[in-house]
Length: 63
Image (cartoon, rainbow, N blue to C red; front, side, top):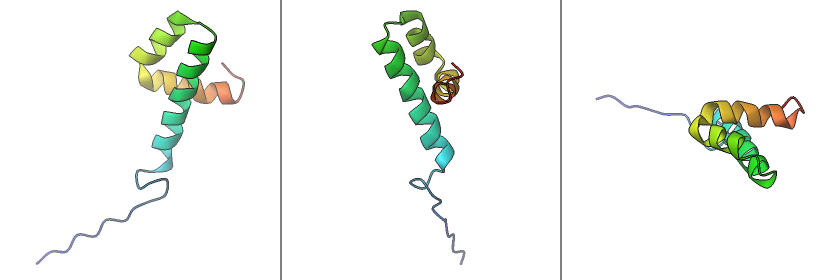
């Protein structure tokens, strides 16, 4: 008999990196929509991982 135990980590069990990436992506999408930057908005929606990185960079004023 085998018993499998899974530990649930922080930030809802999936790890904090996913939460930060999602928050960064939402930041980029919302900011581009508010500023009416349609080309950047399409870029963020089409390439979500790069949009997430760009959103995190926005937090620090790098983008």
